Image (tube, rainbow, N blue to C red; front, side, top):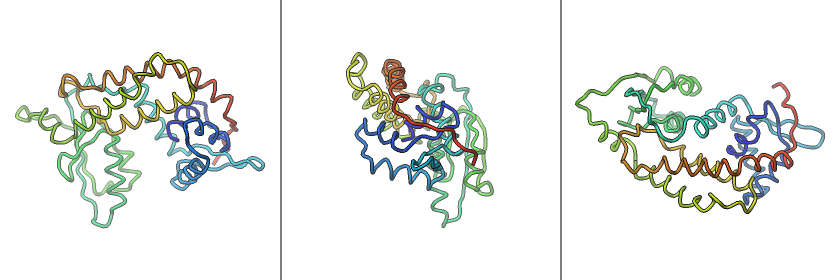
Amino acid sequence: MLAFLGDHILQKGPLCVYSGSVIDVLGRVGIGEQAVRSTLTRMVNRGLLRRQRHGRRMYFGLTPHATRILHDGHARVWRTGAVNDDWNGSWTLLSFSLPEDWKRQRHALRSRLAWAGFGPLYSGLWIAPGDVDVSEIVAELGIAAHVKIFHARADTTTDIDVMIRDTWDLETIAARYTAFERRWITHVGDRSGDPLSTHLRLVAEWLGTIRTDPRLPARHLPADWPARSAEELFRRVADRTSEAAHRVSADLLETAPLASA
């Protein structure tokens, strides 16, 4: 759903989309009507979508919170890239100590930190390459009083290669890229099938692949790190399917201007 909204609604401005046409689009990738409707409802309950009725039809539009998330995801997919060749040697460190009964906040913080590229150096000390702005995460979760943030460089006595291996599960991250390549390599020259279905599955699977990748400095990763070749494959298939996919979605999607909240 997020891949669909980010790829076909986000860039078109403040629009809402008819639920029936969302069902039609996602049905092309084998998702049933009931699953789509329950997902839309959950996203409303989580503050990601809001309902807007036009006559007897129900439309759904992005909330500001969802718009921020999708813009971030769009940047990760299409601009930032999966390979970090330009790391400047800096690290962002975030230390937190939350009350014992704040289980929801702790889970939310760890999930948001992982998406932002952090890994647990120690249980209450997370680290990410580069200068990462986490002020929005801290503010949204209301945990400013329990968090300390530092920007620093490692001392020469620190073996960064070892630190990275101890902090992140490189084998699992690499395996996801390898699995992505194996699934999609046959699609490079294949022009058969539904371009919308192919493109939607491609973007959704790529998002799932990169979401747990912290974009670690390339010079501190194994020489055969598979992210580069996987991303090249992703972009080749995306370039081949994007234009046709958007033409099909334009015919299928029924949209309306999103009213002011």
